[in-house]
Length: 233
Ligand code: C5P
Image (cartoon, rainbow, N blue to C red; front, side):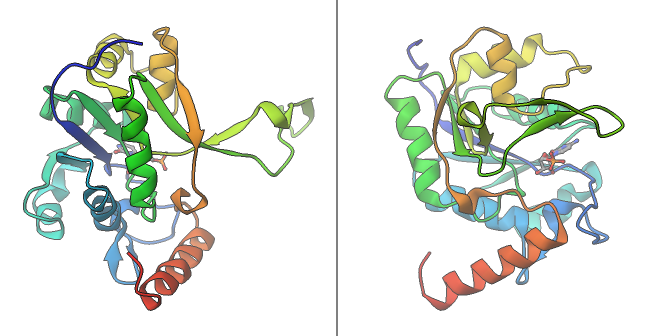
């Protein structure tokens, strides 16, 4: 463990993906769930957690102005890059004084504020890198290009990883300074693992699922409607 440098808790929300797997014409982060763009829901969750000082949202360059209008006034919006890694790097550059970074996918729009607070509490207790993770219900196999099964993995050792992923500020800045763009790493914790840091997995939350497919969008809309009807935040 390293001691945490002083500085604010900054949440970086990468929302610059152009993926249109949801079938909508807008980039995924801007697809509405019951009328509210995912990126707005994700930012509202971060602000509701009460543990985040600054939020930096990273969007496609041509959407910087539009996005600012969709988001609360105190949220900063910057342009992202071609790969997710470039977008997170742009977010880090916009808030280079952070004591703690949270990196949180816009697509995990229903993430409970309590989960965000738990990640920050672990970092404040001295951990360097903290990720929410869920046990997997399915058996996971690796397969080759033709679908031939090459291995059956031990499910008890596997976790499905969510966001927000939280990091000591110095650790994430150092990991990003060392990264190359040919990296096949798909999350930020993977970068700090490669830099030799210990990453702690804590219990995730099913509501922090990533909205990726039309099925996910239907589920998210139903869950959000049920929450609103119950008057809960
Ligand atoms: O494509 P995937 O679902 O893995 O993207 C995860 C998050 O990273 C999304 O919120 C997406 O908008 C963001 N992203 C980004 N810049 C990219 C690619 C993805 O900010 N170039």
